[in-house]
Length: 45
Image (cartoon, rainbow, N blue to C red; front, side, top):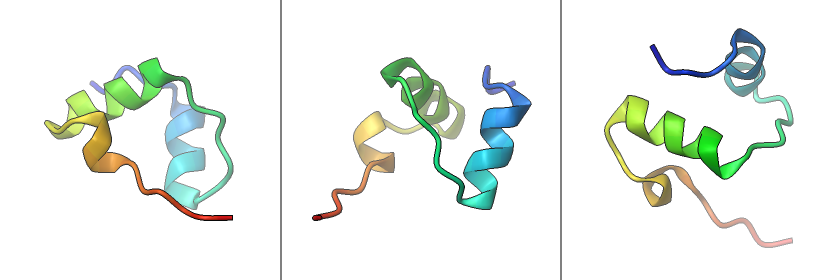
């Protein structure tokens, strides 16, 4: 399916902190049929 572990998916859906690799972001984008830039949001400190 998405190529992500169930632990990663669980953390993401619960809004928990997840250290993501670019390859993980690419898998998420591919799953949703969008680009990595479509799923990123810049948040200022």
